[in-house]
Amino acid sequence: MLPLAVAALASAALPAAAATTTTSTTTTYTIELISLTCNKKQTTVGKDRPYLNIDGTREFGPVEMGKGDTESLVGRTHDFTGSSAVMELFEEDSGVDDFLGNVIVNDTESGAGVQVDEFDHLNGAKYTIVYEVNPA
Image (cartoon, rainbow, N blue to C red; front, side, top):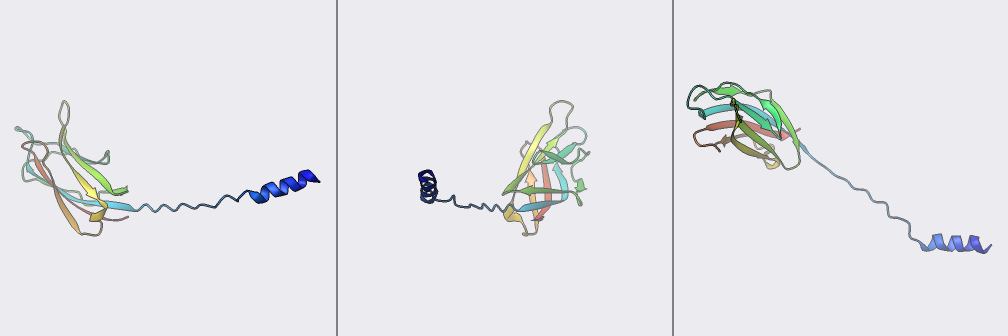
């Protein structure tokens, strides 16, 4: 009988593991692209061939654009979770593509209406992007 009594005492002396529940709420946001305008092209001859990546995913282009050209991006969207997403604009070249700049899209822009930002990393090139951020 002693082993049974020792087992009962041992189980009574050990505290039961506390049940833990971790709740993680991650909000997803949708970037709704509206337009891309070439204010100043990067190439000196001919037209630029810009393309847009968001968080590493190609979302637009490449297309030919010259100064004053605007491309409608309506209907193109990108979902992201967390606090931000990175939009990067490149210009397609026969060699290494040129990085034209990036725009950080923040979750704080959600519901704030239409946003206007610029890509102007490389001397000479300047593009304007128009977009909106909403909860997905």
